Length: 251
Figure: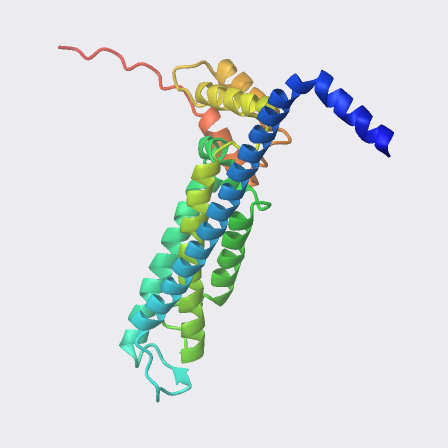
């Protein structure tokens, strides 16, 4: 054992200069760990804030409904106009959120710019999609449908959750952008975005648009899954006829 320690001290004496790069490496590792811990803390705080927003939205939604304690079990919307109006407002809110989501889902340029909005593997996107499914399932057939107070309350909460979940998922997608992809994948997304501009450019020839469209699909293969509806919208844009020049007017 004594020989071991003597050898260790001899080594340290001969290579004392190594202490500086080792300390630098240790300091760098400590700094990296500190930054990582800070990011985790910020993420936890952001999650707690989001949960608070969700709860606040639920409470606000309940408060705006003005439930009557002794209301009958079955609510006839024709007889109870406030319930009819409430459902109409909820339908409008529900439809507005869905339209905002479809603005991403059907716009390939937006999907390339904010891919997390179509990626169900992202936790906040997955939470939004679950909230959408719940709101869609609880939506009454019409504002004139006979529904119970409990059904209205559940639908009201679902629409509130849907709205907040979308806001959170959208904010996260805009924060992430393409940061979850590797450098080669980001380059492919960038090429796809540039080619997409050619594919929908009315000043380009049909052959140029068709070729650019094909290359867009190739670049996105394995990176972003386009829905059938998004493909149909894009193909209509690509196949759009180039407007023929108007004949000169006689003066």
